Image 1: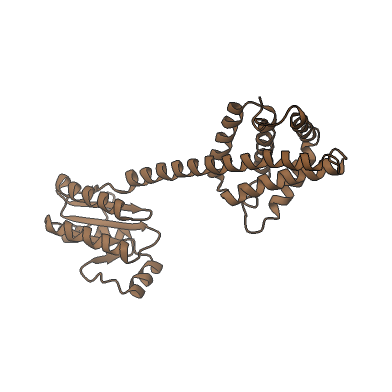
Image 2: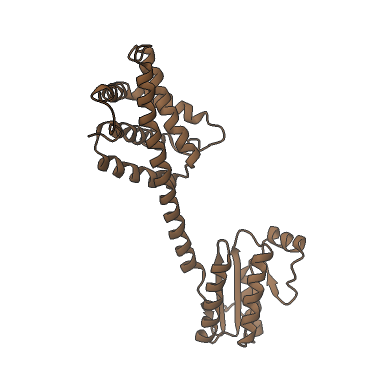
Length: 291
């Protein structure tokens, strides 16, 4: 039993499915070429424009194979193909809108081609319209569902990776430690940062902590609030806190929003921050001439 034949009366729609599959297989090259052009013409979706020609061709063949699989192969084989393809297009940055357009354009090309070839004619048009809907609609629905689950899983894994990479206090010198922050800081991450920061200060006996926000894309009032809270907590355990990595655009945003960082020592780069931290601990870096 094929995927979209469930509930079809007799062999009427079975025959139509076979005709659709045969037409796609026999005209695959022309169908893919026309489909690629239609996808490139989607001006609001630049996915094809940023892909290499080799990647476009490979992905196009895989998509065409997925569309044909739903007509010819078992449900399990199709689901496996769908999962693999969804994971790939998520990595490529395709949107759900782009995917649904891909399915609609492919079905449109096949329908018009079969009509021009005389396979679809006034006497059987209603039946083919019914069968094309039974073919494309479940693919669209299952693709959206699989894409969404894949995207959520990907975002979740990225979030965990960011948390692991950007919430550790790293000792760089005796009494001086750095915490590099990467990505968006929300309430959940702020809590993790606070816990790791305080644990690290005690563990490494840090007297100076540098919060490096070079990798934070946006600093708004909420992010600033979390940073100020972290600095206050560091001071309560007897250490000083410095904010480093303030880019010009971040500085402009902070001023525009009226965020008060007067209690902070701030520097534009981590290097300057380290130099200041060493000065606070009565040390400095000096060049030694070779003998």
